[in-house]
Amino acid sequence: MKELELKYGCNPNQKPSRIYMSDGRELPIKVLCGRPGYINFLDAFNGWQLVSELKKATGLPAATSFKHVSPAGAAVAQPLDEVDRKVCMVPDGLELSPIAQAYVRARSCDRQSSFGDFAALSDVCDISVAKFLQKEVSDGIIAPGYTDEALELLKSKRRGNFLVIKMDPDYAPDEIETKQVFGIKFEQKRNNAKITMDLFDDMPTKVKEIPQIAKIDLLISMITLKYTQSNSVVYAKGGQTLSLIHISEPTRLQLIS
Image (cartoon, rainbow, N blue to C red; front, side):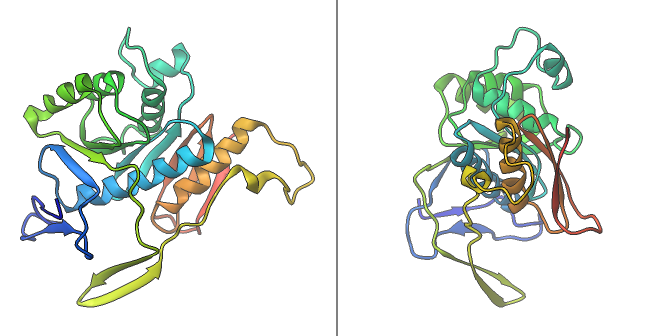
């Protein structure tokens, strides 16, 4: 598929609307359920970039909860104890796979902001993710694949209107990205700076050794900030982050002890 007609653009009156590859290539996505709109894909593609980068940097399954083109929360897989499960409102008896742990943590960073979110997963969506999402208010999900059982359950959500998008994990975008505003084209190099554990090999601080989980928190914070709007703060603790946007101070991050 080289072109996909969207439900509408940023607003319902903005029709027609579509996505396509400028060089004529096939789109790297498949819509398995629902009819996405313009903002849905902005959330989906930005969320996918974030979780892909988190997975590469940490080696752990990663997930994010996107809302209004910024992450409401992001996390990597970490086990949940009984208190965590209650705080994250995990249904009793639901066993969580690593990718489900990541999404549950990501969504629970700020449950209010995640209301009606778009989920992005670095790994195949399994039945535990689908069961958790079943009772949550969410608009859609993007992942590199879905188990048959998970896909069947997700397709039944929102009377069959829940958006399910499959992303080609091997897709690589061009080095230069462009957009058009008011008839004027903008062009820039993609923000593809590599944020990895190597950054902590020679810390410019008195304390040279920091715990592994703190390194993971720093990685998650810095990567998440790449996909927020400007003037943002990211708080990180225990493998998950909360982003606060549109504040009066410059972009920064903070680890919570």
